[in-house]
Amino acid sequence: MKGKTAFSEVKKNFGFGCMRLPMNGGEVDYAQTCRMADMFLDEGFNYFDTAHGYIEEKSEIAVRECLVKRYPREKFVLANKLSGSYFDTNGQIRPLFEKQLAACGVDYFDFYLMHAQTAALFEKFRRCNAYETAFRLKEEGKVGHVGLSFHDRAEVLDEILTEYSDIEFVQIQFNYADFDDACIQSGKCYDVCRKHGKPIIVMEPVKGGTLVNLPERAARILSKNTSQSSAAFAIRYAASFDGIFMVLSGMSNTEQMKDNLSAMKDFEKMSAAEFETVSQIKQILKERDIISCTACRYCTDGCPKKISIPDLFSCMNAKKQFNDWNSAYYYGVFTKNGGKASDCIACGKCESACPQHLPIRGLLKSVAEQFDCGEPETGD
Image (cartoon, rainbow, N blue to C red):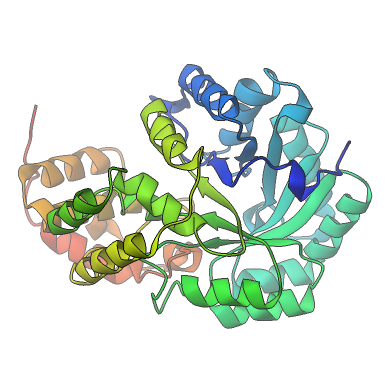
């Protein structure tokens, strides 16, 4: 029924996030994405999540080509988002929404989120009556449920949910590395959602891949206590909390899809012993000094020097963890057609866009000190 999807129509508690789809060169690999969609649906899951800006505006089109054109509308549940970077007035919201429908090839979205809400962005959405417009779209049957995704402190989330009590669900970053983090405040945001009685959708359960490549000591503890991969284990952790309606994973190939499905198709909450394993891993992670970037790439859109910030941070982390030539080599790859860390002019646009609230300008100075003092090494 158009625009009237019930929460109960969402099958199981695992969603396909379409922000990190498989790529072939600079384009989405449709063939592999089709196979992944087939695998996902074949196992009884049906929730897909996209946004207009994902993969340089290619994600919605990939959803249309690989999912919408290949399956009847009732076979899947589709979530999309209203992103603040695409409108400045209320009059621009509906044309953007219609553009999103056309890009996805559908005539309604089951779930529609006010995207990446922070204190500053909420003020813009409030000024433009964005929430009110979304609720009207729901009344018109063009949206099934209105929610928000969030990247700020818990008190800001409490303010939003108090002012807009009709919000039906909240999407937060939630993983065991960020649960007690003073900046991300995953645990505190979770508590706010529970206080307001809102179903929770989890994003970044593997922290942009950070929880895949665990330090050797943590990896040994994990393998000793479970046969699951580090990614599957992290996803199960997020799904094991009360009030979690959905856990999203941004899978980039069929192998990741298979691994995630293996953990979630017959989902069981973590045991007390498994939570103790998490505690041990968290203690090891606290000892590391790495940049907690999730590679969402929000920071790169407005960079005047075209610095591929997440890739350079990845190189820095690899250098700290493994201290081999690969990190310097790939730094050269990532800066060949873009800016170096030392090219940063400290304009601050990246920091205002960063959901992790990282001090990017200072971090880029450290990266520059590490990599820009000489010529990068070369490899095969």
